[in-house]
Length: 328
Image (cartoon, rainbow, N blue to C red; front, side, top):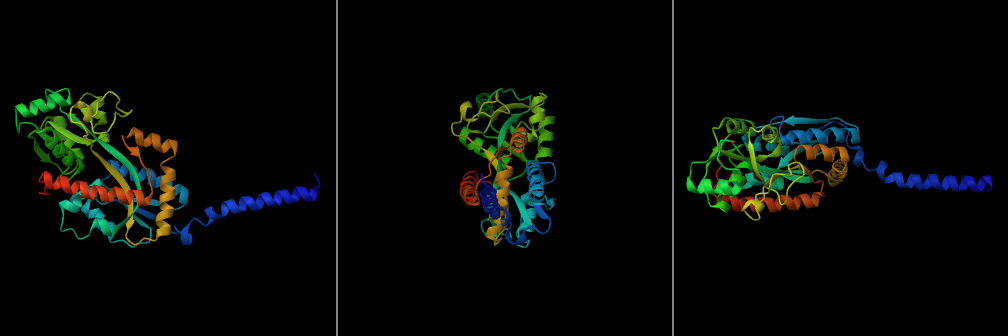
């Protein structure tokens, strides 16, 4: 091959490579990000939302070359942190680790300062954490059917702990009561940690909660796992049956965690963040890490996430009304 021909081919390959790389180089909208990105987590440190925010935040920081800071703002059933995020500038530098709780709160707290439906724009749904039904070992029930029979024989005698009125744990228990036709006494706590502590101590009988909150206690024999509220069994706990196969067909309960930005955040920034988050949630190490914590990675489009939010607001509104659930 003559040298000019070889040079021509090489130059052509360089141009092709440059053309391929050009969209990536211009993927950052207007040089974003130029400063640290803050993720507000409306719970205390150590929970599932905090874990997800820190896991995603670390990888996002590495990918975009700027710090990602987690800002824990617990309180008022996630409303405190949510309001702080809604009031932040819509510039892509403040995100909220939202959850199913935000959808519940639309109906549970009709007089909130902000409307979750209009105050935010969805970025990406990060993960789904299924609820698991656990009981104190002193409860004489080894499966869901026995628990239902026990509750029917002693109406109001069994108590369930929850991480607060309107929480995913609370709604799961109320849904269980409705579908099973049983009378259980609910005991709300200010968070999952004190609720689990009293369940371990025998002050309450049972609880629906996300897997990370009780997994170690189940494995240590301090709590008994009766069922998981997923459509099918999961690999993390293969011996634990679903609630559906245990006598309540169609029963499902989980809590999703996803990132949203203040309303009117530029679409180019939302798209930029979504692409990075979706890519992160496909990384094998991240998938393994989330699975180990009982969370199923999602990583959908902003449009798909918006549909999930809208559907959950309607679904929870119906449950709140049917079960006469209040914030008090």
